[in-house]
Amino acid sequence: MSSQNQVMDTATVIVTGADAYHFSNLHILIGSWKVNNPTLPLLVCDFGFTPNQVELLKTISGVVYLPRKGVAFTHPWEGKAAIIDFLKEYTKPYEVLIWIDADALFVSPYPNLAQLIKGYDMIIDPHINSIAEIMHECNIEVLNVRKEDPYFSAGCWIARKGVLLENYHTFTQRVKGKGNLWECDAFVAAIYHEKLKLLEVDGGVWHSRGKTSLATCTVKDLNAFHNGQLIYVLHANAEYTVRNDGRRIFNRLELAKIQDYYEAYFLKHHSS
Image 1 (tube, helix red, strand yellow):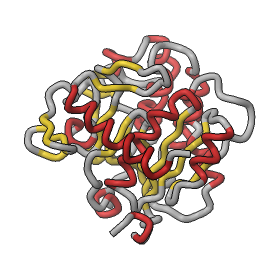
Image 2 (cartoon, one colour; image 1 turned 90 degrees about the vertical axis):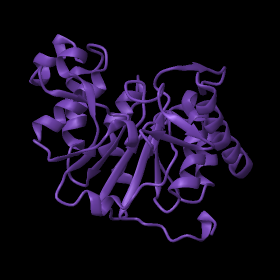
Image 3 (cartoon, one colour; image 1 turned 135 degrees about the horizontal axis):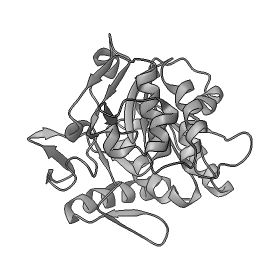
């Protein structure tokens, strides 16, 4: 059955965002969404697209374009932390929000997240490092977090509606431009500030990134595996080169081939 004929599950929404430079990475994400999770609406936040890019997004079935209102962002991380403002433009009810960075892609369909998240506030994978190992001292003090607690990755996560977003935005404003990963620092602080109940999952399976299994996952055709289990998301946040148009290319050839497949899928169905 084609994605155009499938019934959309509006109880769960996928949210991403990018600026003009990262639009080529968004091609891969959209292609992977169409293949793996096409029944979940994809909300795309505009961190600084060109008019032509906006028009293209508006032609894609299942994509909901969310415009930026107000002054331009000086860094895409500001937009990512402002999800709460973008969602004011989305009027349909939902219960579960998936955030995925534009330089990541889906490689397997998600299970029923509404069932899994029952009794929890977030489904998330803890970082392998502690706060003290990642967050700079200037932000540890401002955000009032404990150094010994685990850090969390903000590249892909799942949350129940009504949690995190307001404090995520507020804390980002406090540390903007300070330290190294200031936006992610604010994300981590918001989780601890709200004392959210977390369903912690294996990061190598749910979100394979530079600190987990990008270098060690096994690959067969378009599927990636961590210890024999299907991986849901591959994230090109490490171990990549950059094409002239900003598109990230995995250094591992078998992972790059997966990116190529989904980019080709997008260009075949949605190129302008």
